[in-house]
Length: 205
Image (tube, rainbow, N blue to C red):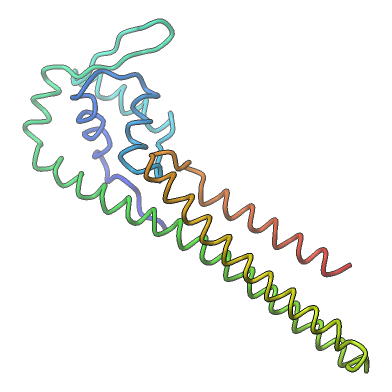
């Protein structure tokens, strides 16, 4: 099971530290958190707003209306809270750094595993084709097709390797710009699974 990004109570303190720089509305807070995590983690509204409500209840933040937006600002009591818990906040910053590395590793692992599975499926399909040709007694007649199949397999593996490098470059670019979506891993997994399914279905025809 993937460990939580923040330990119990730490997200509230971290939100308070972000608001110490300037007042923000909820969406801006979510964006600020996403930027600090390089886009590998973006909290939902259901995660942020209950914490903000608790901070307001404790007198650590206030909220005001700016058009249709609700803007949150830290209070003097909130700044005092930050000063008193500075050591704890430093530990949270260290945990955030570790979480960013862990989440980035999970994205890389997901991509690598998916690519390995695709290559294994291609190799398996090629072996099955050779085995079927042999059992049917068509080894000689199928030799040109087997050679063609081997060439296609090598070309497919080259395409997969190039795709892997391109995806990694894209992921790093998005992460560096703080634009890596929260659903990156699930999106990669579902799309690569769709490619596998398509390969199997075409091979069965």
